[in-house]
Image 1 (cartoon, one colour):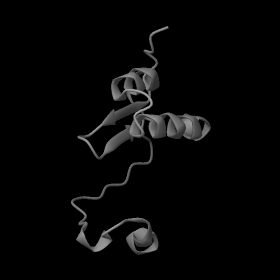
Image 2 (cartoon, one colour):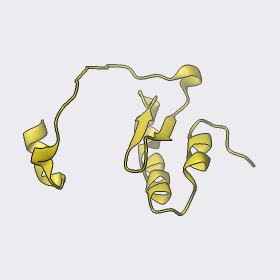
Image 3 (cartoon, helix red, strand yellow):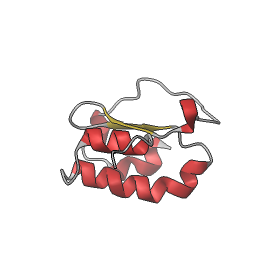
Image 4 (cartoon, one colour):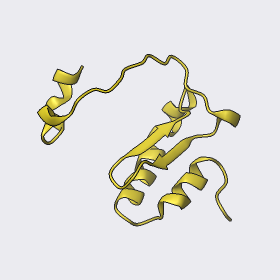
Length: 86
């Protein structure tokens, strides 16, 4: 798998795998999406199980907005968890 996608990552040989696990179902509490920054250059996305297929493109667009600075990371986290302010 890593060889198949190596061309997509800059400086790929410098990356190393820390751990690998299989997860067939990924469901968060309340079946909410978990979208949170991990520092300045990484994000964690979880809780996408089956309904993630339906919402993946929308989540991806909002994540791109957060990375580009068009929305705040905290606003995206709240929105993805269904706690957006109206």
